[in-house]
Each structure stands twice: as structure tokens, then as C-alpha cells.
Length: 304
Image (cartoon, rainbow, N blue to C red; front, side, top):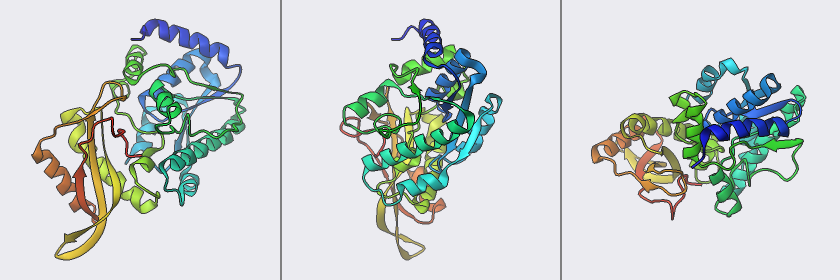
């Protein structure tokens, strides 16, 4: 386990030596990037500019939430929806989708960095990202998903040797609010990895609403490590005595310590039925809802 105070001190000193000039940080609002933002700000102060990119792949209300929480940090918000959907158009392979998102991210940050005269990018890569990317399990957008040519003098990853539970410890020691330090993980490629196959605006709208319902029903009552909805494919159903060919939603809720392994949660039948009822009634083009029982391994936590 990491020695938190020493880690914070050493990280700040290391950032000072790594960055000679202005830097930007990829800020998503999750615990990883938030910890990096605080460490980097303590190291280089006003030479740091946090940038949040609204990819169009975010959860319901996410962008508004980020703007509110990080308004004191001179946060810059970039609307990248068109570019990300364009990058994902026609992509069905999970690895290709992750790499498309990774390249779109880095190009957006390069563009913003040029405007600011920044030559360094700071990002919240953690150790499991590296393990899964380098081990061929899946390419995280900020590791294996990065393009080979990048227009930055350096990419700085202050917490690249930490597991998620260790990052949370550092967050608490830095004084970050519980809303951030204990926040549930959300994948860098966003809802694109919760959609099997090609990403479209229709699918995004469906999975975004379903995801919001799942979080509302499970987050506070059951405190899962991670919970969400994924869109699988279409299946036949009946609504209002009419045959429909609607989307199939899979619900996932897992317990874990560090994300490297995970177990599906035993949820009450009444709760699962309520989630199914809300999703199928509130989202007209969903025909059925499933609950994923698979642990990690053999599955990963996310669907892609």
C-alpha cells in the first residue's frame, strides 16, 4: 500500500522536474484526473490549465456537473461531440473503437494546447490501465489507444503506479470532497464501450437514459464498485399489444477492491424488477432488460 504523504510530496517534486513551461490536464471529473489536477496545481500553479472535453459520450447531466464542481479551477470546456461521433462512425470492433476515441482525445488536446502555448499533457492513467493495455486485454484510450505520433513535448502521468483504492486514499489526503474521492469509475471512452457495435446518436440516447436509471436505483442503496447499463442489440418484444423490435439493455453491478477482479452483486429481485420496469416504460424503444451475473474474470467489468 502506498505511503500517502510521501507519495504526495514526491509526486509534486517530480512534476516540477518533468514540466518546464505551461501544461494542460485532461480533466474528466473522476477521482484519477482530479487527484492529478490537485498535484499538478500544487507543483506548477497557474501554469496549469484544466480542460474537459464533452465528447457526447458522457452520462446524463455530466457536463453540467463538471462545470459546477470545477468552476474555481479556470476550467475550459470543449465541445467535441461532432468529432468523436465522426471518429466512431462505422467502427464496430471494440479495440478500434477505443483507439478511435484515444486519437480523437489527443487531437482535441493538441488543438487546445496550441492555443495556450502548452507543451505538456497531464493525464490520470493508473496502474490497471497499463496492465490491461500492455497485457493485450483491452486498449485504454489514454494508453494503448493513443496514436503513435503525438504533438506534445511530454505526457506526464503522476499516478500511473497506483491502483484505484490507492488513488482514493491520496484524494482524501489531498482534501478532495467525498463526491470525488469515492466516485464510481467511469470509462475514458465513455458510453461508447457500453454499446455493442457501432455508436450512433440513437444508441447513445438510449444507453444514457438507461444508465441514469440504474445509477438512481443502485448507487446510494447498494454502494457498488461500479454499476451501469449497456446496450447489446435488438430483440423482439410487445408493447401496447403491438410487436416491437427494440433494444436490449444489460444491467451490471459489481463489487471489487481495485478493479482487477470483480464479482457481480446479489441484488434483491424486487430491485431488479423495478429497474426493468423503469427502463422498459421510460425508454420506448427498449424491449427487454437483462442482469449480468458474470464475474471478472472471465468477463471484464465494462462490455467492451
